[in-house]
Length: 491
Ligand code: AMP
Ligand code: MG
Image (spheres, rainbow, N blue to C red):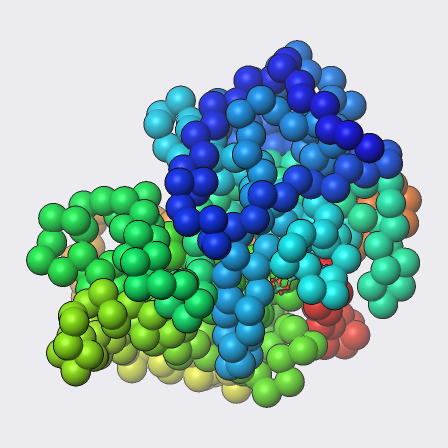
């Protein structure tokens, strides 16, 4: 089958990655599919990107966003990268993804548009290059909710069913997701370049990435060192956000950690119900390496891999370079702790918590842990006591804690935002709980109906809603099998 170029829809591509040495990517076209069908399309995002789809029929969108017809100006590449997966180094690359192009929005911002599940590439190894409809819809839902939660993330523009089957644990429907990200440069891309390319390529690539994401760093004395610091700060902010809403990424391998600080590569991820730092959702994470509470340490581990890759650029004398790198990495722990603590303060309505407030916060977390209290709903209960009527919250220990907390709030003269406003901005009321998401995915794949998918997207589009609450969307799972549900990696 050959690929047609269409002119009807205007994109504004500028494919800067092609200026890099060719060992960093492979020219690769999406593999055409038999019967594409548009399942989800994010009109608001298309408008933000400056892609006018107003007069375009769903059939045409399907042909385009499955990769059968490529728009003018697109330049398809699969990117080369490596990564540490569960601690072990591997040569990877886009095995089932190709970039459609770098779209420049009307506001002048650059985004990669990438097809995920678009067929084999030179990096596919033994994989089929494909993705399941269920997994791509899951990524669509979770990434869009993450965006609504105010958390940096790749976004989802479209899901197109391929009309072809994909074999995982069983036969499933295939689909292609169009994902949008500031870039797809990962910690693993740096590991790849540092290990397999020349020092000149490492230098060229690092300059490219700094120029693309943090051009202001060229003004600093040591741009490579400042870059490490910047990526560290971005990652700290990201993990604090994740911990704020109970998000567990599930596979924080270095190839899944971006330089831009966006959440990317949604696989076996989930939102925690009961507060338990050891919570793991991925069935392949046997040792709990990427458990909820381990995420800061794992981000730090990944940043160490980035730092190692940058050493030759930081100083010609390796000992001096290592010393400088350590100077940056040593600030991870105190910076994270401060930001994490401030975030928890906001969750209980205290804008700049003081050292004494740490005890108050820890007492609440301990109580939640010992009583299997729902993470999200405990904070909802503090904001709207009449809404969460679980008898757990009548326990003496909780009532005593609440009294201490109210006493403390009275002590602090906090005006704008008020305690409640601050909590409303920090604590979501709705999160995409796994049992809800799985129910929707099962509805779509079994019946072909999109009604429940659309309802879920609509309901979760206002996670910080402050009125008209629908308790049905707030309940944690009741049955044990839902509670122990694990998200499998057969994506
Ligand atoms: P992930 O677990 O999605 O981060 O992927 C890890 C690596 O495996 C990346 O290099 C992917 O491109 C590759 N990969 C995952 N699934 C497939 C597949 N179905 N076919 C080919 N490569 C894949
Ligand atoms: Mg990945």
